[in-house]
Image (tube, rainbow, N blue to C red; front, side):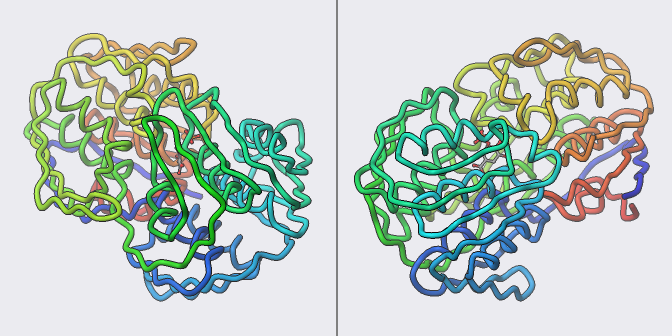
Length: 419
Ligand code: S3P
């Protein structure tokens, strides 16, 4: 891996076609591979995490033919196998749920970062359904001896789309209904997609119920990823006079916490060309505006959890004190993102302090050039790039880790072509 040097940008005006959504791309591969029939998935994200999902379903016996960013997925009955999910927590957790009720022995592992992330949150409720899963101290590697599952009614201690999805997927094959209740609603792509594939899924507020169902492969086009759009959006707001237009962004309300927050602090953001499909889509136009400091807390957190590092980068350019709280979940992402966000922004001279469940940023003070080690966390690398480009420049080590979710991020968003 190599370093990248990003210089201060004095102006920012870009039009970008949004990177395809990572969460939806992974689901489109996993769910179609497991369904009956064949589906064409267009605008698939060709990133490392999605390729981990493709590799896993191929090992499970499904056929996936890639032609540019179109995938043809031929569903197959999954057979016992050894799976490596790389850096992808979504792939690992969803597969644990999907495989628990099938016949076969499945071993699942991942890279060093993924092997350090908690899996008990998925494994324990699955065990309550009768799943036979051995873990390694609550983490990967896990070994699943698939077998019959019973239904479940479960109140989740943390709002997590990955846990909710794992349980709903296990419910496809269970003997009874699976009902999952969250304290705050997390992203609902699994519910939307399974419903579109014939599964009996009912949502009522923060509760979702799935009845045992057979799913059929379904052609789909992946919308753009608002989590990837967050970088040019925040950069346009951080650079004086900046503007950007990001086309084809998925604007599912369970994902648009960033837009709601930015509008509430004075950002000039509008949607154009809105389309309602399985997932809503719009072009997002952003113009630099005077922003007030913000507080992120409570039910907003799951709606922008992956955007918190780049929001903290933006907070450095907003006069006043911005606060992130109720965000302990940041500690169990690809890195401990409280620690890694604070370390990255401090290296650039920011006044940022970690707290037990978030961080406090005293913004509006000048940044300085610095070197950031994102510890192979894609979102920390991209957030450091935004802070450096709007500040006084940055060198990012192992910069290619951005390709976990955003291949060619530096070229497309920052305008730096060489790594
Ligand atoms: C994801 C859910 C979120 C998010 C992650 C992707 C998904 O994780 O942070 O990047 O695809 O379901 P949690 O479910 O752990 O909150």
